[in-house]
Length: 452
Ligand code: HEM
Image 1: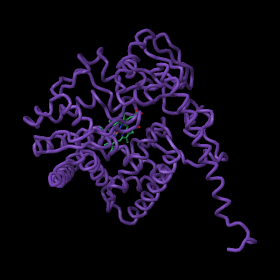
Image 2: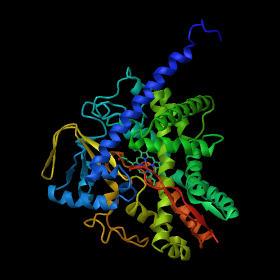
Image 3: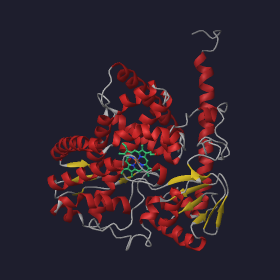
């Protein structure tokens, strides 16, 4: 190339991207530093978002429940975020129709790329914000009536009669994964069992051909981490790539099913598309939610269960009686749930205890804290797979957004634990667990174990 040539277009594109990265990186760093400062000064809500406190959030939840006792439910933090931490207050907010997942006028509450961190949505003309396509969480980010319409369309996928078929798949896949793991000696519970199992089941549910498991796991990790907000420029790029790949995958699948319909959920949704009860964007987002909600969570359930069973010595009870698996799953959901919290926004002024929440204020609903509330669960810090669950835990949330895949997740967790206990009764840790660096999702990213 000679020097008198016009600058190539790539140079012109590279500059805004570089500036966008810098700007986004700076914004993330400033927000994190502000939060960390509050965490260091003892603010419990800020502590939920930062190391080292978030590695074990349960003492912070206990503090929040104690503070809530004085206010009758809602705790306000210097971060400007409200939180509910007791079983009673969490249940009340989840079931209260005056709360939704959007603002009262239907706008999205906040965007990780929003300058003010306020409710104003993102500015597509700002290169720092244009870098990231906001993730569309489908049902999780919709209020009625759109939520009701879409949920009805998704519900048949989870009908009890289908569960038996998925159980067969789960057993076959688990058997194969355990054969491979046994051959290795020391293996990684997360990457060799807990992640590929739900990916295979959800791929069958969506009838996705030729599943590339490591690629799916990567998408799931990027999107799952985004539930905490975008944590770095690198993460922002991974997120954009994952979203674009998933959109392409499902757009292609829609075309295939239209040409050759089957008995799967995508074929059913394509029919709704053709009847005009669903748009293509809604279909793609819903399929994406089913995919990601379906495996990141269940992966953590299996990891958290084995970790708790091993740490409390109750693994031996399960090994002696694999029939305890269902109880161990239920106790894990109460004691150390994969989804720690969610959020709701008041659609009008609401009073909870002595606190008034103004219209559009957000409130974190600490599902995991509710599971450790002594007012709902006797001796809550003790893990006991034989516990009689007298109060329903909130691991699957409650109200309009109650998890659609709860029965499927319970079944997969039970199959994994039961078969592990039958085939590897001597299972024990074989190294340090690497925890997920996250606030919303909780579980081991790597969990080395041995079976002999
Ligand atoms: C242990 C595993 C799982 C846990 C802990 C879990 C937890 C949750 C929670 C807490 C919510 C509601 C969030 C909120 O209220 O804002 C939810 C919603 C949802 N979950 Fe799950 N989930 C699990 C497994 C699954 C599976 C296997 C699927 C499907 C394949 C699934 C599909 C969904 C869907 C579609 C929603 C949205 C429901 C709605 O907004 O109406 N989940 N899940």
